[in-house]
Length: 256
Image (cartoon, rainbow, N blue to C red; front, side, top):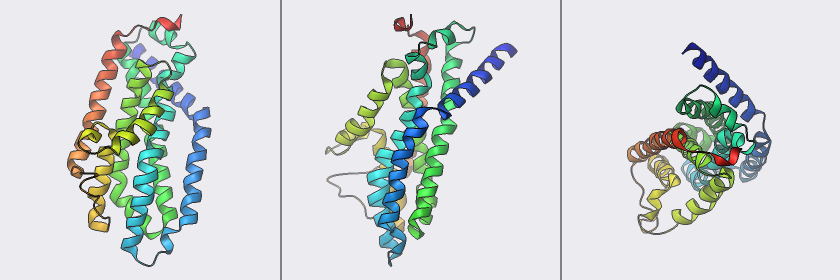
């Protein structure tokens, strides 16, 4: 038992270090830098009406850029490579040969990814809000729960992608940047199968009392922030459970 715990702690630290010092970290500098340039150029803090500035920041940045683009991009850059990187390098077979339960290997990979993703998303979110000035200061307090819950759901879901698909990064990118955008703009209840729907519902619900206008009912009928948070946590838990079960019994014949 002690030997397994040592092996797991070593795996967790090695996985964290490998993800941190990877090409993914460098690639994320480009979209994050683009957000910095956008915020500096847009200048929400220069608007005279604070309520209008907060509404503009919420609509233009939070709902159009950060929630549907930055959060999933930051997540898939690490979550799909946590196991997918070992699979691509054919080193996953060495992990599976170790006397460590597969479920613990999956959880170690997941736990190594969480601080990177949540830390990067939260730190970048706080930084972007600081650049936005007064409306950003309000947004930090109001929208931080939605940002964290979305990050957790995407991390768990993309780990399932990583154990199901060989090229999980491409699959996750197509899902988050194309399928979710397409389904998310369809009328009716079909958009409720996407992670972004519940994140945007939380943003709309949390921002209403601070000046954010509600969306047109015929286009977007959000759930309450409480339901949105509970659903995102449910997606996280269900994805973790599914990942453990699938990874436990799946055979990777392409590793040899």
